[in-house]
Length: 389
Image (cartoon, rainbow, N blue to C red; front, side):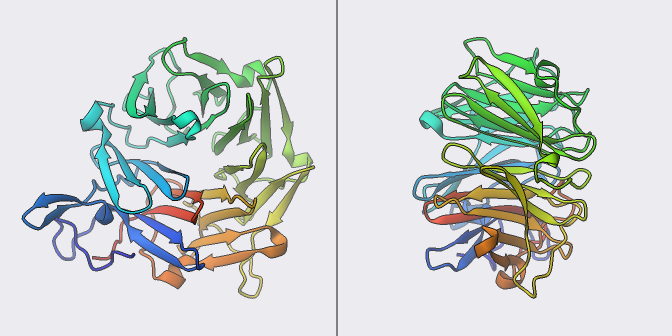
């Protein structure tokens, strides 16, 4: 259900505001879009509905989906408060987690990362105003911690997170562009590892994206770009004598990345399905993992044209239960695009043209975008500063 025509409380006709938009595919294959800030509005009485707090365009956001059609979206509002949008597949609601449980406000440019629903536990990570990492844990109720001995997260660093049978992990770049791994929550003592030094990894590009997936007893995969714009895969085998190794995927079938390419990895049941990235000509690519690595071009279905990714776009990806990859990005015309692979059976949608979507926010840092896949299908999220009333 699209929410065009609705005007938030306190916003005058013609006045602007920011909003989170969800684009969801229905079982019949059609798509619909919803303004979640209006859909999650709280009842103030006397016929007044108060919309969910508006997102800050300078902050990142994340989404997570599970089960039949449960999903959550997390972001910082214009005051830096941490906001949760949640649905079980029917109505949307929201919570201000800063006012509710006292979590610190987010830094103006904070990235966000979310890790799984393993063992009915979800982890949320972001950066507070002093550059410290905030670790939030949801298991029925929310708890959180801020450990000052964890290295500060620089303003340019993304965050990536995963869960496996061993525990919960978050990754970021420190001020030396080293990959830092933080394991655990509370007790036992949180473990901090400089993986670049420990595993003798290639140096990361100052503009690199970062993504990670985990599975099994303790399988971990972390991806970033080195200073030569090659995709580096870090492989952790904690259940095999706690070893790490890495490989340069640039020599194994993955093309060089565009300088500063965003990255997004999709997990398979017991492996990595693949990584979405941008190539040297800003073309969207799908790096497929299997018996080896190869790079698939993402073409449109309109005369086989190769799209160009907008300079400020991120990429987002997910894998369906039948192992089909889904990739989304914003193209050079500021249209929201969605691609479904594999290359032999691909489909492509210009969602902005097809659904007359509000434009993606042009000033938001690298997008941002989020994509999840529930049993009902893909759900895509983006920010707009041009919502329709």
